[in-house]
Length: 200
Image (tube, rainbow, N blue to C red; front, side, top):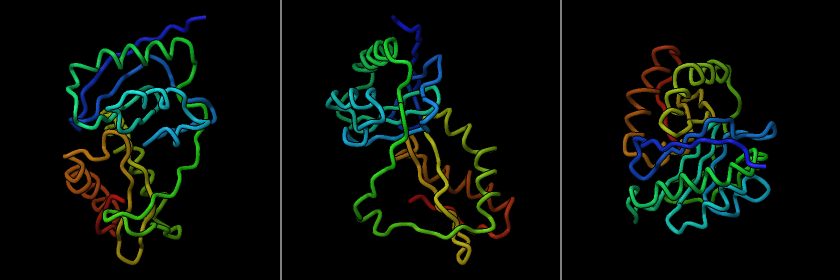
């Protein structure tokens, strides 16, 4: 039986990422918004994401409540592939109820020049307030742009909030502006203890 589904395409602030918006919820009860960097990440989680990596230009896939954000490697023009991707997603979802069946624990990333240490901060008295502010003021706007920002931890000694950017936010040219002019300003104005916001 074919399931009714409509998909339309939106640009995001990240020129390498387009957002494919669906008219129904894409996550099962066991799933949360999930990002996939390769086919291994998709195992037992998302057959749609795994299938999208069959396109040689697909670099990452982020699936949230009602959209799929696809980041390409920059070697193709979106105009030449966006309709093919839209049709592919629509056809897949016409036979599958969900795009993400369950959330799989992300594998620990290997250290790189950009990420040389694992962030492992103990819980602080400010965590709940920070998450509440992010949920209320930041996440809805970021989701509209095809991305997500996750709270990693708060270093109470330095006053530094550590966030992880996913989907269209990851690698977006305006991400640093969003962090400093948007999120950092918001959190500093609401919480005296916050001194800075960084992306991990």
